[in-house]
Amino acid sequence: MGAYNFDKEISRRNTNSLKYDFAVERGRPADVLPLWVADMDYPAPQPVLDALNKAVDHGIFGYSEVKNDYYRAVSSWFKKHFGWETKPEWLIKTPGVVFALAMAVRALTEPGDGVLIQPPIYYPFYEVIRDNDCNIVENELIYDNGRYEIDFSDFEAKVRENGVKLFILCSPHNPVGRVWTEAELQRLGEICEKYGVTVVSDEIHCDLAFAEYPHTVFTDACPNLAERSIICTAPSKTFNLAGLQVSNIWIQSSNIRGKFQKEINRSGYSQLNSLGLVAAQAAYETGEEWLTECKRYLRSNLDFLRDFLRDRLPQVRLVEPQGTYFAWLDCSGLGLDKKQLNDLVVNRAKLWLDAGHIFGERSELFQRIVLACTRKTLEQALTQLESAVYKSQQIV
Image (cartoon, rainbow, N blue to C red; front, side, top):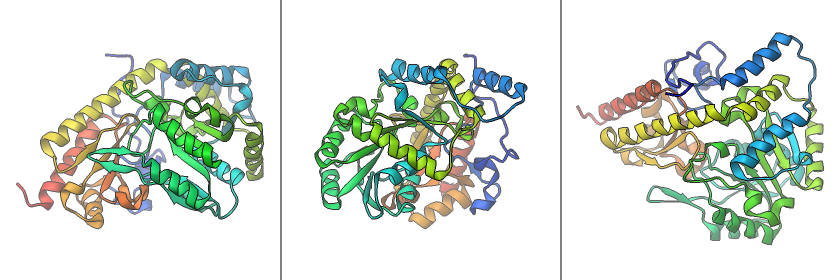
């Protein structure tokens, strides 16, 4: 057994947790078991907590910035784990990756421009495009025999026919769990280079790719597009630090970097949360052991889910992930429509998952479940789902 106990139950209720404390406000029954928000039910690494406690004990929370040690911590992590070489001037810190996506859309498009995404996709991608008056262009992923692939012919056609200016890539992909190969990224890059498309690559889940599916940073796969790319990273998913609001955005082009920074300035944002900066640096410097153990536990949860569905709920199909801590569940075998499926999950199984339709219209018979919980919680959720399915089908 390692130094960390991921089986330890820690109540998050009555902590202003978005996951646990806002069911009624978001239209769900008060007693649902939540496995929807992409955060973990595990405490952050102990060295990170120690660094935060030290900062709190100091007691002064004035405006803060970081010096070279912060950059060295983050850049060393990416060099060690992905072989990715960066430079200090490429780094812009933002309070979150979604904020960065919005800044990129504002900086690099005009109202009415086409911005391409690949559904089923993390739903804020739609929001940052639509709310900034751009046109959503969809290159739907191909779902075939339980696996998702990129439709490259459609990708090129959509880029060409819609005059796409910007492509927001999700790598690894949320929610389907694909870790795109270097060859796949290169094919995308070739098309984007051909048509002058700028790429914003959301790589927030890069540290959660499985060992047998190594993550490749987009600009390493496509060096010819390095001057037309933005790479978005953060410690939030990796180390469960989302509430501390720190992301690290890498922009090699000084021209794009200047436009991006101008949009941040226009938004009125300057210094980040001082405790977030402390936590991020400590995580990249000292969090590797925790992450190794956490990923091992997450894989065991995935194994448990896979076995449960095979043995007790074969009507629900697991789309095998190659990374992230999500499971994307194909519920079409239940024989329900979208409304019936959501009623089954929410009102009968008493679960709060993410319904597939919010990731794209063609995914209405899917559900996304977060595996970053204790085994006890996962088993309870699956047992509730199993009971609801068999009761609804009047099977004893």
